[in-house]
Length: 334
Image (cartoon, rainbow, N blue to C red):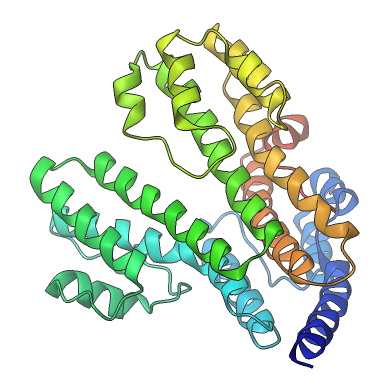
C-alpha cells in the first residue's frame, strides 16, 4: 500500500512539472531574446515566462532577482516532493558556497554578508555562527566535516584555493551520499556525470598550466565513471591518451575539444561541451512518465536557465554579438 501511495505522489508532482515546463526558456525563446530589438521586447518575453524585470545595467539587482527565482522554485516544489532529498541535492551547493564565503571573509577580516545566499539546507546565519564558534554538531554531518577540514587547511596554509578544493571535494561526497540514500539510479547518474565533467575540466586545466599529476591527484573527485587513477595516467603522459580514455563515454566530443585546447586552442568550447554532457544526460528525464527523474531534470534545467539568462542579458547589455553570446550558452533539455 505504501508503494502505491508513493507512486501516486510522484505521478502528481510529475504532472505538475510538465505544466511548469511550459514557462521554461526554450531554445526558441532564447533565440527571441538574442534577436530582440529592444529591452522592452526582452522584458515582455521574460514576463511571459514568469520573470520580474531583469536589468543588466544593475547586475547586483539582477542577481538578487534570479536568486529569488531560484528560491521560489525550490520552495514551490519542496511542498509537493514525496522525498525532500531530491530538493536537498539542489540546496547543497549553497551550503558549500556559503562555507567558502565565510572562510574567505574570515581570512580577509571582512564581513561575508553580501556573498551569502540563504538557499541552502542550513540558514546562512546559522552556518556562519557554527563556523565562527567551531560548534558544528548541529550541521549536516558532511557539511560539518567539510567546514572543519577547510578551516584547518586555511589556517595552516593561508591558501584560499586549497580551501575551495577541500569544500568542493566534500560537496561531491555529500551529493553522492544523498543520491545513494535515495536509491535513485537517475540521481546517482546525475551526480556521476557532474563528477566526470569536473575531473575532465580539471585535467585539461592543470595540463594547460603545466602542473604535474601529483598536483592533479589532490584536486580530483571520487565517484565518477572514470576513475581518478585513469585520469592521472593521462596527466602523467602529458595528455596522451585523453581522447582514447573518454572515447567510449558520453564525454567523447568534450575530450576531443580538450585535446585541441591542449594544443593551444580555446577553452571556451571545451568547457561548454563538458556542461552540455550534463544537460544531455538530464534530457533522459523527458522520457520518464513519473518518478524522481522529471523532478531532478526540471530543477537542473532551471539552474541552467538562470545561468544562461545571466550570460545572455549581460552580453546584450555589453553589446556583444549574438553569435558570440550564443556560443557561450549551455544546452538544456528544452
